[in-house]
Image 1 (cartoon, helix red, strand yellow):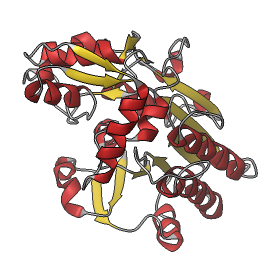
Image 2 (cartoon, one colour):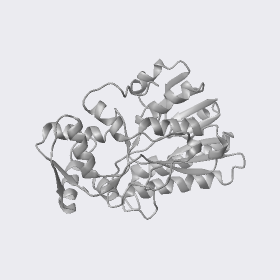
Image 3 (tube, rainbow, N blue to C red):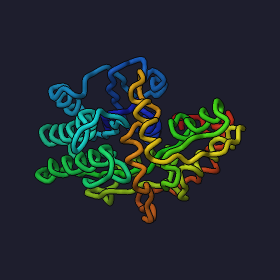
Image 4 (tube, one colour):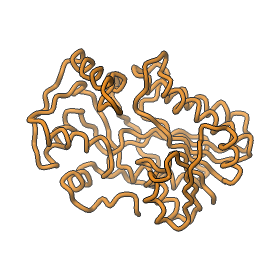
Amino acid sequence: MRVLVIGGTGFIGQHLVACLVRAGHFVHVPTRRYQKGRNLLVFPTLTLFEDDIHDDAVLERLLSEADAVVNLVGVLHSRPGKPYGPEFERAHVELPRRIAAACRKTGVPRLLHVSALGADPQGPSGYQRSKAAGEAAVWAEFSSFAEGALTIFRPSVVFGREDNFMNLFARLARWLPAIPLAGAQARLQPVYVRDVATAMANALENSQTYGKTYVVAGVSQYTLADLARLAAKWSGRPRPVLPMPRFIGYAQALLFECLPGLPIMSRDNLDSLRADNTSDEIMAPELGIIPTPLESVAPSYLRGGKPDRGPVH
């Protein structure tokens, strides 16, 4: 099968590409910056190229050469807006809608779309509201596509060697005597990146997954404070966590937003923490995975070990 992976150079994308190549698929990965995906060139059935996926003509051309498409594009930060900011709208709503419309126009029946656990049109953050709007937009396009087979995934926060989650806390522990933390009591259920990638690869040709939405979450639930402590401990630098009142967290996040580059934490990120990011759903058997415990993987990569070797499966 020829699979177009949009967002294939990202954290989840690189692991998914490895799974798809191992399964015998031919994988095409468009990117804005060719250099960003050069490490994927080791895969013999992968084609990497520069293209603008936000151009409808480009999307239709790419899809005309594909049997299936995976959309992994997501952003964590956006300028403010109601019900969500412009960057969220572009990446989480408009792009999925355009991909789904291009599938219908070019006759590509299979689409895997990655949303997020916590996607909710009434959610407390623009991120969550935009993810829900993106799901609705994709379903709307596929509702009139008789041959279409859509599957949506809602992963929890994802961990793995290249993550910007557990590694962030480990970096903070390197430089700070204690970790100040807003939203410390929010509950999360981290899921291993390879589990997410494997579930998606297994679903690609499995008709049992057509027309369904799947939550993909880990084994255990933790507070954010628990995770910060564990990351610090496993990196070899145990640190206390100092829960901060939400108003101080917002002030800190506003400062981060004013600095050059992507912020460590935004006000919208803090809004997401107002709702627990957990699920009581049991992992669907058709996805073919048993969730990997955080404790069996994270200590190794946080202290520089080698068991998690990145995207090469």
